[in-house]
Image 1 (cartoon, rainbow, N blue to C red):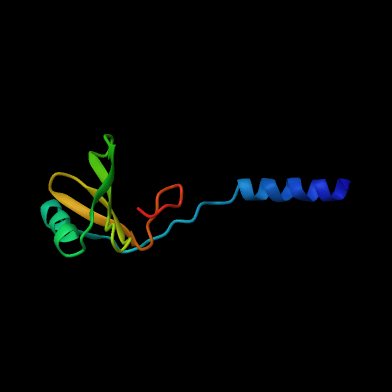
Image 2 (tube, rainbow, N blue to C red; image 1 turned 45 degrees about the vertical axis):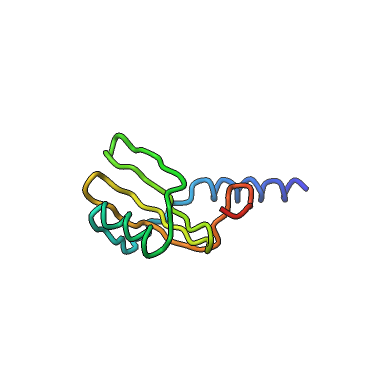
Length: 98
């Protein structure tokens, strides 16, 4: 039992010090007006959540199509918006359809 506990502690310590992985993925950017118009008119997505990052001068919004469950995460300023994530099967944090 003692050896097992030591093994668990060693594994936990190793995981706690694991280096974070950096992912480089393509990000599509366009004028803010065009991105939001496209999300609404072509994809039927409307804003469901918004957060602000004052230090960067940006806002982030999650748009969702309530009929299809498609979603898009967009970071934007007054003039430029970048799509940083897209997906399907959106739901609330409680598992109900969004």
